[in-house]
Length: 385
Image (cartoon, rainbow, N blue to C red; front, side, top):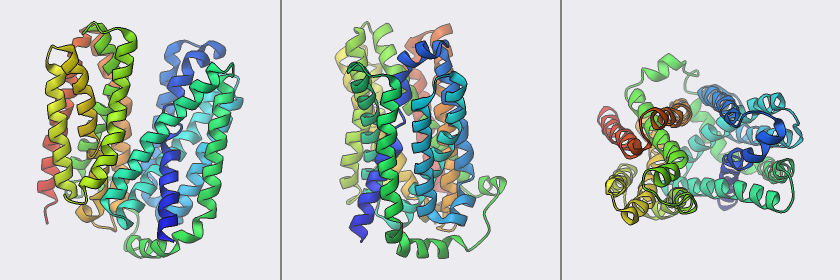
């Protein structure tokens, strides 16, 4: 039964990543058909992010009431319905309206699943599950790209992805009975107290440090995904196609790195694995600064490999660090902080690139990386047993 449950969890993490990059791949055709400025993608992304942040903050209350299994199942259902809604939308306001349930569903399932895995499974599974998220994030745009190049429309692409999401949703609902034993343990752990209010969560020792750590990590990850290719092209003179390829390899580095870090966690604990990842990130950052294009390109990939274990290992250690009864609340604010960093910091660098210089990209992600490393050490110190 445990093996079957793990298979369902792995499939569910694929569903988490499946729609995440689709908007970006479909938008070049969407904005033309919808007759809106290209910049309006930011409005849709902001609505999704706002819903995700809100549902992440509410995840403690929702999960305590309904449990992780039902929260996950209905959240995946919400995202499936939203994707189906995108596929039949003909006006921009319809896209904006449907983005609301999509964001709410994405935040709930992310926080609930991460806490569930942290409570009941080893660190290696957290790394491998997040590797599956990367696989899903790669599959979504691939499907959209295939549909568009096969004379289909973005409506067709979203429809295909929504059907896959529906199938995963059905699998999750069918699997609900096999969640029962861990769910009984989870309810015992989580019913020890009433849901915490936000100010109570933030006042927990180490909470602010872990929130800022997640903010910095997701800010530098999102900034690198969005701006690395532009930096390589405009500042280093690398042709656009090559720059796009190597910029995309940052995400591949994260995905491969998480597959590898799952094995590393069998030898090292979460803190040691995180520090190892940070060290590799620092090496990649130094390589990016070196004014030799071949080294810089390799540095982007190394930076991705180092980034790989940071997110899953910090999440996995949350129950041990803060207590099982508080883990859902803490993971909820971690997710909200992560999405806030993703939402705010890439556009901020866009302003810097536009008004100062895109050459500041390495310095920008460097500052975020240093802040993340420092705050992680503060977190360890504040939560030391």
